[in-house]
Length: 428
Length: 148
Image (cartoon, rainbow over all chains, first blue to last red; front, side):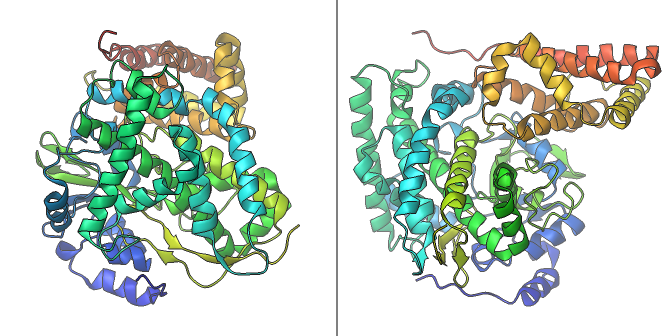
């Protein structure tokens, strides 16, 4: 059971600064769930921006905390490989998962865990689905569905915004992108949560239950593949993969890895930013007033929220050779974590980075989509959904009020919300 | 590590001086840069259909200026960024030659904004910088895709 508790921020800051640097483990999931991670990154940016954690639940790893160093790592895909996975692998969890799932190939999350030239060939198979032209075709459908979701929300009664809005809209969009059975769309969000959580967190109660959900997901997507490969090509993601010469012969694990990537990438990021926007606007009522007074600010508000929330806190790589970053030598084979969450709060790059300012001069200046060959392929879909939901919200509701503190995700990777109680006092 | 030698100090100073001058005189260069891009590559206009407040175009140009400054200076990421942006944009049907066109347009607009204060040193420095940038745009061939 996850219970939302607001932890004393000053005590958390004192603890972050009192810990000897050598013992500082910025990937402690508890700090993310308690929302007390900020002083850790503030300290690292000041005192040790390329930081080595020798011992942790993830094994040894480097943390990259500043914007410029993150850019240097993220754009250098030859020196920093993605093939061994793009998240920090919790060693105990990996061992448990392997007992259930059997041995899996390293990486294992589709093209995001491939290096060149294989990566780009696979990525190109799906990119037409999320290219500007197809997004323009999708936008009216997303708008209609967003309207339906909002029109069905209770008025004057508290409800979970994460469940009824953020998850529902992203599930609908993802079902469309996959041409997945629409009535089963919430399975996509459920599977996404099963992939990203450990027992005791989110909907996961045991390794066996997690394994069963993953097998169910892979079974469903195996059937979809078989349908699409025997049908004429269409614009949905599975058909694109099944018919593209670069991907149609990929093995089962590669396909399953790609499914994991597309489900998580299409789900967690957008839904946590939708939730994050409601949270941020409530915590910054002056900004909410500004938005209501001038809905033309929605596009810059969306970008500011993507920066401020940073729905994926990090991406990791493995050094392919000895390389110097920020004056420190990272050895071949060592894991390197780019903390986008920290880079997006880098005081040397962004003015007043901890403030939420919806009309920033350069609101699109953020690291949340990454840079380099692995830059988020679905970033335009995410922005389109966020823009449309807020355009439709402002037509309908003068206010959405936060009720208490949200429950945050127990993860150093997905930076989001399990639940967020809100109340809509009245329609416009 | 970059496979071209770093930009000559004098060239870097000249390019930086021209950018500073253009920023002082021209304010926001984005409208002129993109007007010229869409004139020469009309097919690019449709890709910006969502950019109602011009923030996408503005941020892209800001990134280009930052990348040029990094490229002529410490070169910590710009050369890699250019290569990788070429690859990711090909996924959106943006051919790599558009990058060379875009850098060239940026140089033209900077030159026109500097007007009478544009110097031969700036001219030579920009030509050499554009040639170096083009190296990173052009050097990687298309990613091989298995035969159908």
